[in-house]
Length: 150
Image (cartoon, rainbow, N blue to C red; front, top):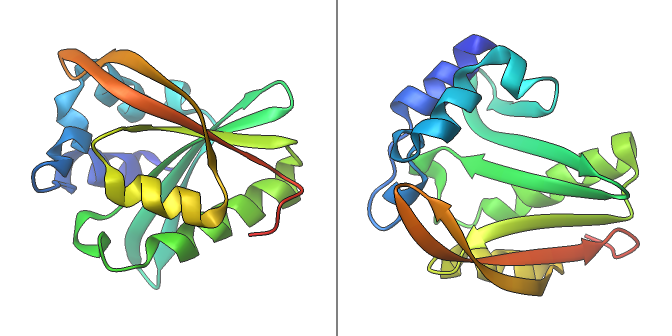
């Protein structure tokens, strides 16, 4: 992801409540890291449809597991497009990194995303409290074994 894409996402993507929790400026530390090219490194990718930026994928290798962070442009959410994006991201990771498992974490209020992840085959690993956005929130960690089809 180039600096231009990082700035477009962090400065223009604004979600409506309750998903405004995911607006980049809600967590100063995350925003600074996302905008810092060295912090982003080579493990943040963008997705374009023609010329328009539509989504991003952040990955972190953790042993045999790959942790995912996903984001879709706000005007594209809630339309059933997430499954296609998630499956494509998972195929990309399997082909290029061959992880044994993939994990992701999501705020528990985000039932829409949790439903999608379960439908694709992720299962709950644990529920935990996490400090972010100036407070402490409940999150769910989900996992999928990579031999499962998507």
